[in-house]
Amino acid sequence: MSADVVATRRQLHGIAESFVAGPQYRATGTVRLAVRPDGFSATTLAIEVHATTLVWPGGSAELAGPVRDLAAATGLDVGPPPATVYRSVAALDPDAVLDLDAAAADVIYRSLYAGGFAIKAVLPEAHPVLWPEHLDVAATVDEVNYGVSAGDDFHELPYAYVGPWNFSAAPRTGPLWNAPFGAVHDLDLTADVDALATDITEFFREVEATL
Image (cartoon, rainbow, N blue to C red):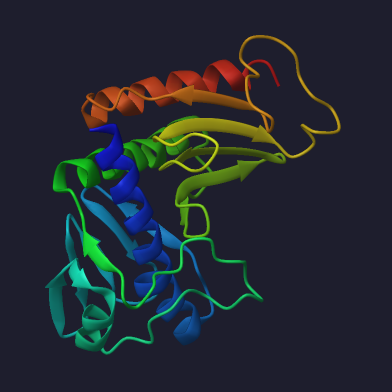
């Protein structure tokens, strides 16, 4: 399952950038996305990912097969946001072939959605955003980032984190502070969304109490 999650996460990262955030930015000037129980969506355009299906105004298609063919079918202005916004690390090759694992995608969606719920539980005034450059749902309060990542080069599988902006200049000590940028918490990828949300909420509150 771990290999399937990593492979699917890398494809979903590219999809979030090229089929959702990029077209949205070029149309409305924002890259902010939103988490959903079964996927994610743009915030200012009607573009959504539900499980392994991409939905756009006037159509839908399975996220499968050559990227080039899917892009042509959507009619969207496909491609990641410009480098003036951020440097893409997950741009999809037009000749790449999408092959998502549905169970792995569900693991990622559950983790991100639970993260959004936990952020609202701990930081009720915050607004969780799914950021396409990292494929993480996060919010910032008092210069501290709270979030859940779908995974990355630092930690391949979904994880929760807390990152104070000044951590490199003023590192904290203790077992909670186990990452170069702050605190990281492994997630139980077999747990349902409610259990994940409870676990992440407890982690956020435990770290918050030490700040």
